Length: 323
Ligand SMILES: NC(=O)c1ccc[n+]([C@@H]2O[C@H](COP(=O)([O-])OP(=O)(O)OC[C@H]3O[C@@H](n4cnc5c(N)ncnc54)[C@H](O)[C@@H]3O)[C@@H](O)[C@H]2O)c1
Image (cartoon, rainbow, N blue to C red; front, side, top):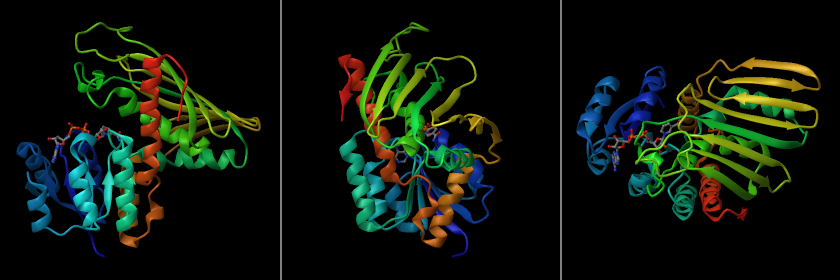
């Protein structure tokens, strides 16, 4: 295969960020961009030297693709995604996996049935810091994981409305939960506390702006995850893991790993941009027809979705909730 030909569905915020990375990847070219908003499709298609579409059916009928990038939110991607999988086109799908677990499982089953190369956009799974962290931990037991999601999206965004399908735990904490899962496996029980309007009162704020989750994992490890979604300063996305004679922090926002292992100081700066690396890996997987290049296959993204949905149930019930 010469240059991998990619299609893009959704030309909003994350699509723009990925497009700038894709321009640096010589092995691939985006040949078509589809968005319901023609202006957005045209803006990115100009940047990428691609054709613009508003109708995915027309795009699929007119062009040939080696891979498709889904940069649409989960609420408006399911039907199109399934169409593309049935055409056996490799798919890169932004997180979260879906709005609901049954839909995510249906998509994962379809991917298996059509044996399609696939990846979900949990970019920190592609960081060399995480690889190094796993190497340093080796066969030791992880006892505790602690994550921070301290951030903000635009005031009034739908992510501050619990009635909308994508509150911040599901949108952002999902990343930290997914990375923790790669260290300690699946969770069994979650409890959550939170306060709505702790940092700011606003009529658009219809979810807890501060919350904290306590998690028991099936293997006996415990986790705590702190969320602060109206933070005005620079975002902090991080995960600490400690266990048998090690304590390490993966500062995801800065792609750094630090801490100690057997009393030896670790301080490592990951050289890569994890978003670019996950995309390069997806392209390698397509070229080699080898799924193993993708650090996080779609199905592995489903557990973080389950956790975020259960965390919301626990927040309402005030009790520890089990899967
Ligand atoms: N990995 C990350 O760090 C990260 C960061 C931001 C967003 N995301 C994820 O990316 C996804 C998109 O987020 P965003 O912030 O770019 O959203 P956005 O609203 O900025 O962009 C979404 C685009 O999809 C288009 N669209 C909607 N339905 C469509 C359809 N049926 N066909 C074609 N286009 C359609 C919209 O017109 C819009 O332009 C979400 O799932 C989000 O969670 C991931």
